[in-house]
Length: 101
Image (cartoon, rainbow, N blue to C red; front, side, top):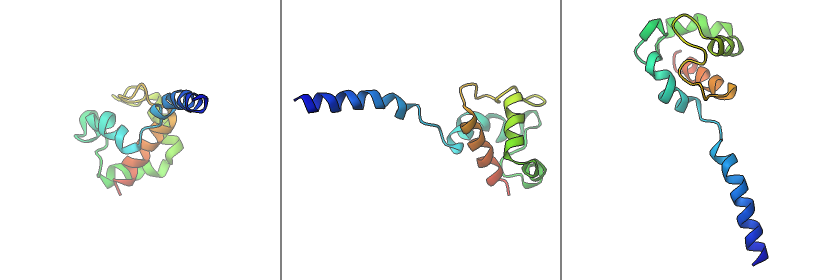
């Protein structure tokens, strides 16, 4: 009984950490970034547009992450993902770049 209680307590303590796991780049793109990057709203480079993304990709992921965090043009800081951490933003950037070659 004691062992079961310890295991249940440990599982309960670990559950919030699992629930807070980073979203994938695709998840962030589909739920946040696609609002503008699917249609090109406000001059956002569209997913799949190799010409629009090639010069951006040449800057490197870290530079694109800094730009995304600060915002650029009509894009506010972090785009529409105010609850994204740096890893999630980086994953979303990589998803867009990789799907725009």
